[in-house]
Length: 367
Image (cartoon, rainbow, N blue to C red; front, side, top):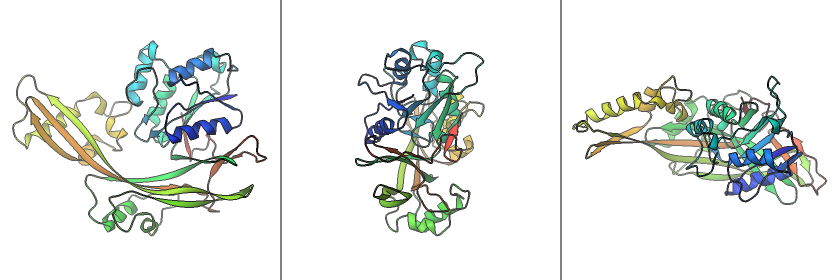
């Protein structure tokens, strides 16, 4: 038996809980007081309702490609979970999220045959985070996670569909001045579809709004299933165009003298401070510039518009950038049909359908 856990309070979290309830061979773990991964791991170890050894565990939560999952690892945790949070679970036994070996029937020297399947957007694009998550979970399970947007569609008469969507994203240090410039930037990025074919230049004109490119928009899209499930041959999804304005802040406190007095000296001081920070070193297992989408520290510095100010003995730096994203459901490039899993309501006559398998490296990262 697999066991699923999705304690969040958003509509997507509720859809994940319903998915786990409808998924074959899966039991939803959802006591109201259970809100952390540490609590979930302890539940799997101690609850009389759990049949041990279990098969796999599933965890559902919001996530992103920058190495964040928005679920607490341990009680009283502040904010979401990143690489450093996982390091805390490994260094402090009171915060540990390790899955006990008896839960999965593991003995030292055995091959690793059990998995924790994370269900949340894009975190599969952050392998260093997943590797640290595997370590935090005890190191004796594999971890899988989507490389794309993770979509869930519910129908009260049929069941739950699980699908994925591309997130074609570009970033700029300022707003693009014109639609033409934005279209050219998307096209120049060299995005490809799931089968490796290039996104045609003409498609960007269909996906980027003709006006008001600085504002996001959602467009309903009816997706073909390629099969009939009862009377349904399609489901309703969305294509999205998103615009996000993001910031990065940094401060330096000077105790042995005043901050740089001139405007010209402040960027140099900021870059020197960041450049010596342990989290920004290329030798770090997951450097901060990489998490933010940059290949190097130099690219990170070049990717923002920076402003600097001084207050008393502190130099404050603020960076801003703009991200433009097209979210597009992934289809089979031969048939045009949506790629999906279907989890039927148990009282219906419909059969489960599995097209998205966690071992498929086009869709999932596995560590």
